[in-house]
Image (cartoon, rainbow, N blue to C red; front, side, top):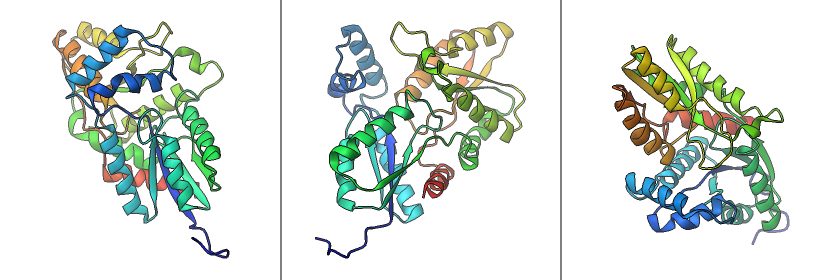
Length: 298
């Protein structure tokens, strides 16, 4: 027990990620968290199970998030925690550990570079709820967006550089329902700005931007889709395309299935060879970018 006059540790870091199942048996429970407990269709469950089976039965998201947290902790020489919105360790579980550490301040960074109320905004809401429920007294300082952080741009450019020369580059970000942008949400602007900054860093002359991984709902989702771009490229006689997802910072289902399996097959049917750079994962440049974001918070 700390003495009455003991000083609190000055600061820590909280990384936040979406969460993903680690076994096929977990997919149904995972989807229930994604849907907020609302019932889903058996068809969607079976399709999501099929996709996870196609990438080996589990997502590496937790493994990479843990590695990113460990690398950042080593870089900053301060404690780094991580929590997931839709799977273990849940944000509420991590907040119990944060409370025990008894920090004065906590820099919170969502592992999604571009801000949207439907994504980062939801992480903020869930974290503030968990903070209150756990009785955490630390001040949480939020990095709401780091879409234009120079080291993030360098990290994406570093991965893309070996593949870009002489090929069409298609930057992508995760689609959202169109209604997300109704009240001036910056997500579309920030996603396109990240793509433009990476293209400028490499002096790319031939690049596009599209949205991927549209949801299995009746909503109208942001486009253009990757498929529509590939159709156009095929008609134009383009035979090599590099897809570079600048909305994601590690390997997970939207990279390993949507790009590596679904889009690659779709492209091949149109006589297009599709490739992608290695994901950021634990790239030193990316860890450096996170460190700069944390330093600005604190």
